[in-house]
Amino acid sequence: MKTCRPSSKKFSPGRLRRHPGSGPGCTPGTVCLFRTQGWQASCRPWRRRGQFTVKEIYTLPDGEIPPGSNLLILSCGRTIQEMLFIRPMLAVAGTPFSDDAWFFEPKVDGTRCIVHRGEGRTVLQNRRLVSVTHRYPELARALDIAAPERCVLDGEITVISGGMSRFSSLQERELVDDPLRIEALSRALPASIILFDILSLDGRSLMQLPLEERKVLLSASTRGHSQVAVAGYVRGDGELFYKAAVSRGFEGMVAKRRDSPYQPGVRSRDWVKCKKEMTLDLVIGGYTRGRGERGATLGSLLLGAYDADTSLVYVGKAGSGISREDAARILVRLRPVGDPPFSNPPQEPGITWVAPDMVAMVRALEVTPNGRLRAPVFLRLRPDKSPGECLLSALG
Image 1 (cartoon, rainbow, N blue to C red):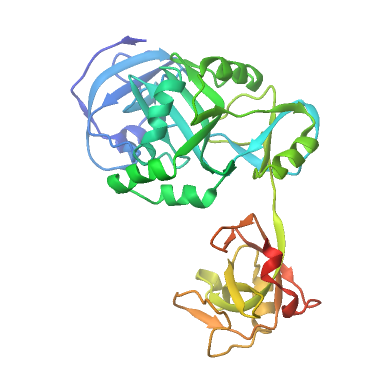
Image 2: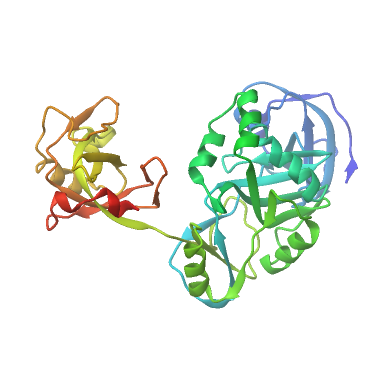
């Protein structure tokens, strides 16, 4: 990679994105990298107003994206293609299967993270293209030791407690921005990262290589560390692997075609996620109104189950999965009451309390340690089931 021509000219990223053309010193078939001043890692420059001073201009073969920081990438003769931050490749949903042409790896219950290492720095990027490096200082330090000096890696940030991934603990880390609190949590709830792909190494893009080759390079280029691990995987027997992964507390598994390239930002059928789920029967104790077109009907159902003292305990609300027809059908059957039927009613406006005489079946990923449903989805009503049969003990 060589410097073409430094420039002090100021570009408007928004205008630059809309108007294709060649950059100064660039030739067809190359990508121009503009190192800028005034860029914040938490923002996408071309979506912010203002000017950015170009300090250096580099060229390299089209498609080769080196790790680094503060880079805008302009493909000559076209518009801005992407910047330093890379959108992660995504998986479609599916069910467990076996196939010798596929790898199967555990699905970690965490937050997706693209790791950028270069120029003596480590940057952690989430799937929304936002830097979260400041929230996980212990991970940046660990990757300085365990990862190659110049690379881009893909993985999942998690908090492990008692040998298990704890999503509730990770959420506590994700919602904190105060530096003192972050430092305290980095010791009390240290994060780990599970790496499963390598996208760039020593300035060379690896994204067009088959997954099988990228896996070998990932294992060979990373060093051992207590907070950095490379995801294990098997070939062929996905159904057996899925059962083993779930029994060990993983969220499920991800199947990946062995010969698949890395497709940034694409939800590809080359990757299939198979997640564990639990089905629960719960008592309807209230509802909230919908929004927009559903403003005249219900938006979500407030759900609970009975504890040993026969008190109805609130466990969460489900809005996903309720169609217009479902909403209309359910609403006419609910009987509004003045007081909440729950022993621990949620404190939020706009709730209509109802008599607890209807049962709904929902699907959820888990019940969190504080007794709340995670990602609940309404499936159907259970007119064949008595509310008294919906017990808190059945939630695990």
